[in-house]
Amino acid sequence: MKAVILLILLITACHPVLAAVPGDAARYKRDLTRVSHAQWGLDAPVATFAAQIHQESRWRSDARSPVGAVGLAQFMPATSKWIAGIYPSSLGNNQPYNPAWALQALVTYNHWHYQRIKADTDCDRWAFTLSAYNGGLGWVQRDQKKAASQGIDSGQYWGAVEFINAGRSAANFKENRSYPDRIIYRWQPEYQAAGWGNGVCN
Image 1 (cartoon, helix red, strand yellow):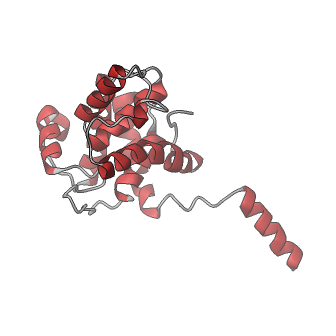
Image 2: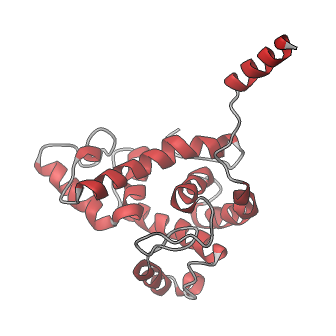
Image 3: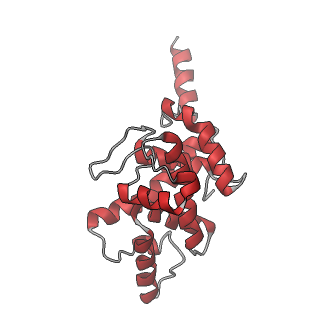
């Protein structure tokens, strides 16, 4: 009996259980995959978007943050109103608590940022994109400008602009810099291992 228990412990140590992916996530997998492929093509990083939703709301469609961000994608009211106006055909109904709207909005908002960010590598570009989703494109641009003024490569996020703060509070800066890191290196591998498709920075 002891040998069997030891064998089970050894197996689980080598192959940890994927406890990070909540059961609620499965109901949204098909919709997230569909909207991701429609916006980004068949190589869409679906596992990255799933990791981002995990970080934002843990897949709770009724989530509401203390500062007023709501739904799966945790859109602030002003941001959801803005993106509904920019994409009236797909997001014009402005329903951040509606999971279908939230998934479409998250994928679209990431794409909007990605198109406007220049970086040295695709991995850097994704880190900037996620930073912009969390804190705004304006802050990314200010951080890059400050980096350049200090002789730091403004197109390199990891190990460069990652450490540049153009004026955010210490708490906001810490949260913003942990955001890409947790999505790409903490949660994304869980979703890739669970069969959610491509990720970034691999």
